[in-house]
Length: 96
Image (cartoon, rainbow, N blue to C red):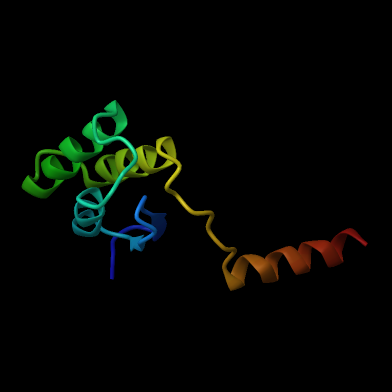
């Protein structure tokens, strides 16, 4: 189990990956991305490596990974959780 809420990433080769840890982010970064020379991708690689060696806060590195995935349009939309759906139903009932 990861330390972060899972992100669903779809790489350029069509491979879908669920990323919820620094180690999983490192594996995902080794896959096929649109542009490995892009600054957000390079930042994510550097910060993920720094988080693994303890010189960077893992939350910052994971946020950089998410930003790189968004920048390259690889992040898939997250489905609503069951709890959020229940909250939406309850709040809808309160409005009527």
